[in-house]
Length: 107
Image (tube, rainbow, N blue to C red; front, side, top):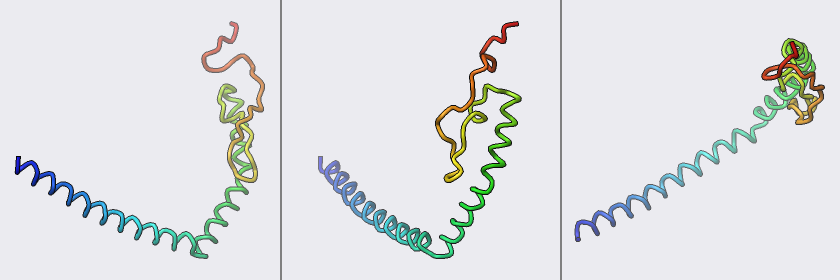
């Protein structure tokens, strides 16, 4: 019984010290990430990346549209892209042609 209590106490002490050290390291990493994120150079690079992506949206949209004619069943080709965020809207802009993967073409 005494061994079990000693073992349990050792586990408890190890847990407390381990979590305290882990929490300190987490806070240290969080602080470093915050400094990098708030750095003006980081923000400049992010702004440049956002602009580059916005500039590519029309070309990507056109490519998706053209690839959609090969297989009109692809949902990615039929989604509208938001030019502001560069993400796909959830609205479906295409018409269901009755053909595509898993549909009988009638022949």
